[in-house]
Amino acid sequence: MKPTLHHFWLLFAQIATVCLGILFVVATLRPDLLARIAGRNNVVLVQESAPTVQGPRIASLADAAKKAMPSVVNIYTSKEVRQRNPLLDDPLLRRFFPGLGEGDTRRATSLGSGVIVSNEGYVLTNNHVIDGADDIQLVLADGRRLHATVRGSDPESDLAVLKAEGKDLPAITFGTLDNVQVGDGVLALGNPFGLGNTVTHGIISALGRNHLGINRFEDFIQTDAPVNPGNSGGALVDSGGNLIGVNSAIASQSGGSQGISFAIPVSIARTVLEQIIRDGEVTRGWLGIEPQELTPELAVAFSLQKIDGVLIRGVLKNGPADRAGLQARDVVLEIDGKPTRDSAALLSQIAGLTPGHPATLKVLRDQKPLQVPVVVGRRPKPAG
Image 1: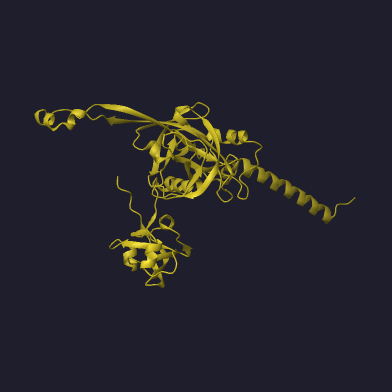
Image 2: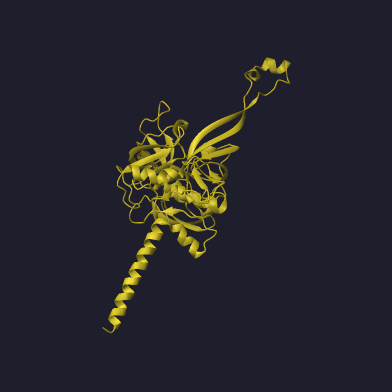
């Protein structure tokens, strides 16, 4: 039979379907190959799960653990500390022995966990795990020991990025919080008490936890997965083995796990990671205002009909807010159209603004709404 245009069209459609299927498989399992083909030599690759589904369905939690465990490292740090001589506290001895030494120095060691986020050797962990350390060693799941240096840190979110001396490392797949719900099962991976790679299981107990006094910027995932000292900086993964948080703190009266642990969500972790890799530091927006929660008592005092927004308690002189005309006693209702529910939300929204760019604040002043344009400043680095 002589081929017709219809036959050629069917053949083309079949070839296109096969090619798209191959491209989908490669993009899902080996996205790094696409980057190499495209010539993206200077791009840090971060593997992601599918946007609509949290990665491929996995039959059991053992498969999720198997997928994530190679990317979780044990971190061992050490630093020199000076032991203060208790005799120095005696003013009489200091008077008659002015040359009394300050004490001996010793090496202090600590442990923690981290997550490999790029096969080029970038590792995400907590700032408090590596703070002040002058020697950092990583132990991988396969037993390899690598030296690492601090690429950058962000004390206000308690995150830090390390650069390990290694290539083609097993990077974790990034998940998303879009479909995460309270009650979902999660795994916490890390190095509790220096035991080595350990996996614990629990559920998400709450989302968006703040006002805990742990970090300056808080939006924690709360879980009941057992987390203990040494787990800090480790991975919190979903049932598909995808990273959704970095384990950071526990609520405990004994120092051990009591079923309340907190993880920094992957959304914050990724923003910090990308800024540190690109710029070596984290840059946040700043307005120079002192916020205060709007309580029912304050609402009555200011004759407000609703308890919406955040009260401006004070304005820094010559700061961005002051130059824009914002005043103490103004109530911030929105920033660029997004409502400000409380002080934590307000600070997070301001931090997410780009320094040097304009923003518009909707405020309530003397019970009248106002639109106030302001040029965002750069948040000063925390003291110390």
